[in-house]
Length: 509
Ligand code: FRU
Image 1 (cartoon, rainbow, N blue to C red):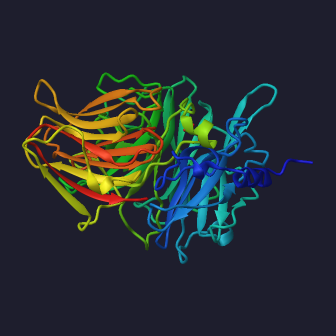
Image 2: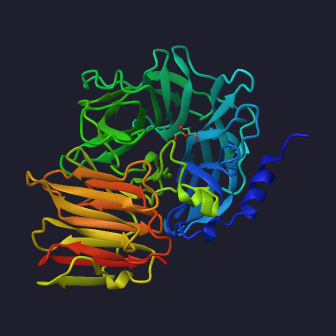
Image 3: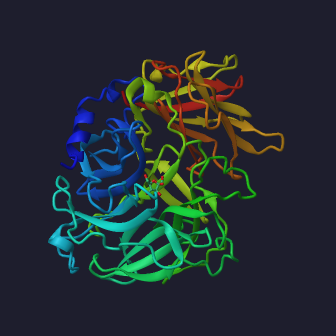
């Protein structure tokens, strides 16, 4: 008899004690049991947000990847649902890998498969048990109610990689072509036969039959992305209007594995970068070849934007995996049988070609405001409004010139620090140090030079063992796992004597 993988996952979830773990986050989506990696199929549906994610319920004993599912009305409190995609078909039995969603309008003229408004595209991963040879195919799952999920009977839609590429062919993102009504496009990460990374574009008018258009090219980039790593994972395109120029831009966000740029940053095993241009056909025109890391923290990868139906427009919201490959060695595996989380969604804007990210969870104006103007202010002042809390968001603004200011989170022995520090050349830097925490394995200290003119503002969302830091207007985002003392509450200000700091606070637990 074939194994009932749905029942096995549900049984593992029932036995889970993960949410009782002191490190289990309050407002970050974490797996009910086992391992989570990439966000998948993110969508907005009449004001409810649905997040699917790479889910391995039997980790670390068995790496079998499902699509987990959770929903939220406020992007802070998540309700878990049963897994949506079970890897029990001949084409996905080694894993239902990453992909995205499209939400169709009721009256959209497309021949929507099964007339279901929710369409999910994912990669079926198959490894030959004898040869270990990989086959990757692109598959469809549909839903009419976001409770039941049906694999398309004629899966896979795209049974294998085209000539010129290897079986590293995955992570479909599908979207309506804004320039050609009635047409959908698919972007996929691939590896060329010469072992360099690239992205492929496909086109469809019915979401079932897909025509290969070709590789995404960069005609104005001077060859910058022609040999850019050995594989591109999770490519996605988002359209934004640049606040400064008013131009409509297409921002490519992707994870090129194996790059070693000659620039500050890129310390993580795999990076996530973006570049800006204007998509015409398969060409990302007016992209000059410059790129930057999306998030400068120790843990960030494979982000995805929420899909929307045209009648429900809103800001572009991006959520990433607050993790990276080869980082399953976290304390929560021992204490709660779970590992990794997603970031809180960020609203994206573009200003002069630079991506700005702000957490969607905003601080209300009537949140507690604290002004410290101490001539004698000692280092390490507790912030009263945070006392007793382990999940909170805080915006700090230095009202006067300060050469070093920030926060210590945790207790006196087991903590992280997040500070803005003036370097010898006068530039301000974000300095993050987790060397005194319980998780230091994949980077303990990191310094990030802020772009000139970044406002002296630190926004920190700390949630038990996950911390997201945003500097200025979101010029820098920095995500890290912060395993401080398990029950430590609050945070202490670290400020130079005489510096005025204004703090605006909201607590989540
Ligand atoms: C990125 C990734 C994707 C793949 C998925 C498998 O983290 O490797 O390319 O679809 O994870 O879990």
